[in-house]
Image 1 (cartoon, one colour):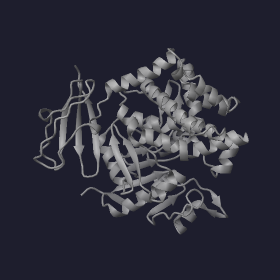
Image 2 (cartoon, rainbow, N blue to C red):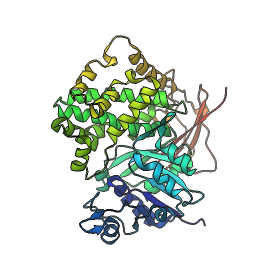
Image 3 (spheres, rainbow, N blue to C red):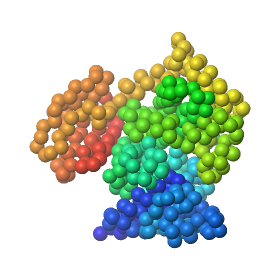
Image 4 (tube, one colour):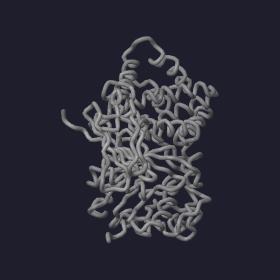
Length: 444
């Protein structure tokens, strides 16, 4: 029997502590994982005591997640190398600005078979342009990295209120492993292979949420906020289409929890919206508001807007993403908050013709042409021996018939291989509580 997998959580803020509650409970219940879960904690003094001592004695992160007990098997460790020593599974949940330094410290400490998953919602600006956080971890530590993004407000997750989330994984086996570690009856997970888009959604939605917060601060009303969400989503899709390294962006991914759901939640309930509203009302700087409202934690939306702006400027695309650019200019260049309304009024979506409009619409057309989402349309059998219904979809979508479905014989779960009229084959495995999709590309 294989040794239980050792888990290390890299980070212990609000979201890190909330996810530690889930991981600690599942590690106690599942033999596949080592019972002790190490959580790296940046040491701080709280009311005369070290935060690690408080967590290990009182089993509560009184600074970042007060009022919620952490499982006794979650051990706070102040030294990163000690926390990561021999770890098989690494869960990254720190502000994205610190990821390079932390990875450098962990090199050589983890298991040779280690795998990671990042819950970090941000991107980085490298010399060559866009750099995903998962890519930074992958390159620095030579491990496979999945991503988890979704409509997951940390305190609601900690309170065990029902929510959904999305894991994106280029190696489906690893995505399903992390699903086993993280899923609960109230934290339901879908695993998809469009990992880059999942990660981009998690980063870009924070920029849109800042714009929504500006509108709240200006008392613009729900109609205006709805426009921000819609136009922001269009810019998210266009950005993903332009910067996806794999060249494949599925529109279905934007319908997962990591996409529209997370965008809506963040624009109505997230910290980026709250701080942006206060920014518009008070005129205080983002840094001051972080201290006053977030207990010193970092806000991701403004930082991500700066990184996106510099990438767009480098590529000569600043005029193609007016909402993203307006958020950056208001946060960092002293533009008045009212510029957000001017941005909406003159957005290329509302003008006849124009390159920017064509860019966005072209991206959407491309997504529809690529869309291979069997999840929404394939009617499948849940029991051995049943016949699948014949399903016909729009002419640009795959057509599925009973003859195109074949069942894998070595598994008790139904597995279908669907050959479409494109160059793709999709394999769908229906587990009792998961539906995962793998896409394989075949040369013409």
